[in-house]
Image (cartoon, rainbow, N blue to C red; front, side, top):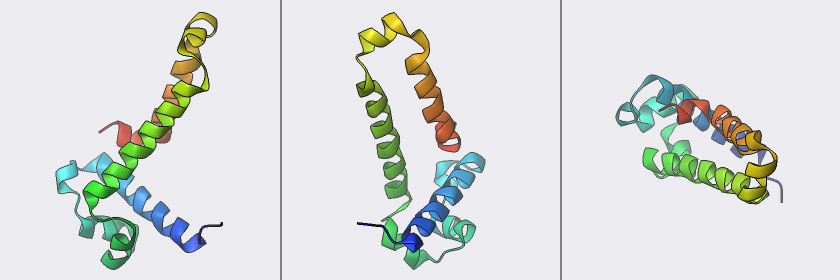
Length: 105
């Protein structure tokens, strides 16, 4: 089942705005109004996707955690340590680069 392109665009706009704001402000200063103004969407649209800023943050944490678990499950850790010392760290660095703005907070 394909996801509606409008939903994808909206979620991307929300996430880009969040990443921009989290890089510039403490989390406590990020409000739904500030985020929606930055994303160019209205508050109702935000609330169709997330219940709150904390809910958006939880989605990020879950996504990053799932990605990290997937990296760890790719290969047995003992094999990685014995064969390719940089394997895990290369993937970990890639994960943090993908979520740079969020990871640096």
